[in-house]
Image (cartoon, rainbow, N blue to C red; front, side, top):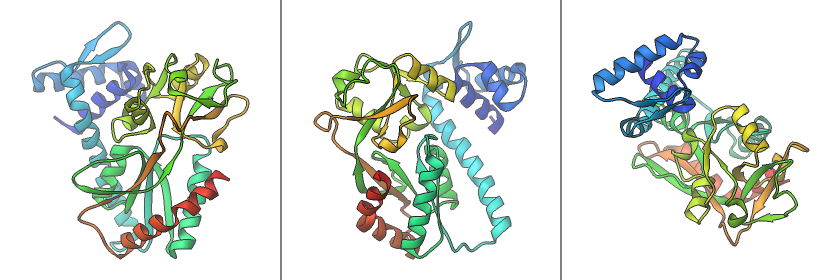
Length: 302
């Protein structure tokens, strides 16, 4: 078993397609198929049920996808740590944070604003970047970042997860969606329509989607891995769940609508650090976000 086989397995699982995985890795379909077959031979059982156009995970594949994702993320984190050490030396004087989220409209602007605000108020150069959950956890363990933020609760015995505030849940819907005339959406309103599911995000912590499902959301989940998939979902009366911020509107293409708080309580935002690392900088960050997060929320809401 090697990291190349695990990468191919992970990409096929995420895309549902051997050809798509090959394109992403810039290799032939035969190379991907050969690696998967070798991995299946080593494991003694198939990882996929192969259809004419799509590959579906077997029970073994489902059981292995989480550990595979974490193994790949850890491997990549070691490379990033080595590169960072070579450029900057052993000691760092900055604070590096990650927001666990898929890319969203205006995320560069929002992360930039948060970085500036945190730098000024903490008195130390602070950067915030988006990261997928497994990558953020691997970077935290490797020392590439000092902490990460999750939208929704996160539970891991290696980490300390502190709720630092809450946000309202919202639904991002397209311009032709039947629910557009409404001003406030209930979970019952959303139930008949498909909702975006992202394995990389929604299997890591209790996201807005998983919180809504725990409160009775009955929508069919549709896995999407590319921008084209998301656009197609929105064009076919699907929707995407997330934090309710009107600043995320993309008029006239799609808009963010609030989910009725009576149906869906506020979702916690959590600051996650390693249990084994609780130094002065992390303590300063903990104290800041616990006392000043309400100010940050007002800034971004505006």
